[in-house]
Image (cartoon, rainbow, N blue to C red; front, side, top):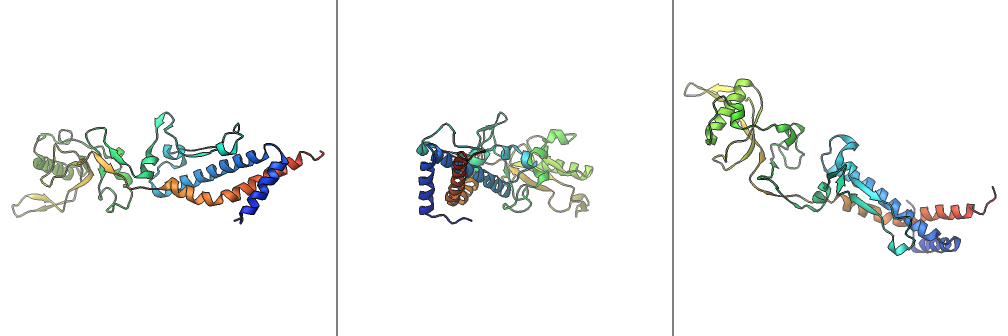
Length: 264
């Protein structure tokens, strides 16, 4: 890393101003654009590290990260600016997920419910990402009339017994939405698996272990996101390098101005 002090910056600035009319503004513009570009690279890297991004670099969240160079037509240094962030729209679709993650905003459900991933959905810990097989797009959640031949309505306890029976009969995993809350005041998408059966004291077959797990909770319309300052960290890492970038761009510009006077 180049060590830059204030004297170096002042010397480059003076040389640029002496070299040509727009040499100094051009060097500053290039510096700002380079800083924006480097920040965008770090920003994408932070997003990949902090969030679950599927589909590689073609994922819309990653392609929505954009940087804008300082405008070439602007000649006044104090008015120059470059930008980094997530576009409000990408491919015609709204993209503002990263701002919400960055600041830790509160999500408000537009519909009746906010789907909250439970600890079970995340593989046993809230620190983990949602397991691929438990993504909401893959749950295919069903109501009792979709899974039982003779569905019981408005009786959650009996609906659970029906769902468990179907899971053990078909040996398939079922994701189920009951008509209302359980006796434990839980409501959402439940997952039923074939856990095997055992003969109870009553002589009947009963499920081994707990057959139902809560995947997503519908209990609250609001969900508070934990802040993930991915852009802030990228900006803070690039900011100390601005002086270095300026020296590099100034050297390029001075070399360009000096070469104009050379004979070919």
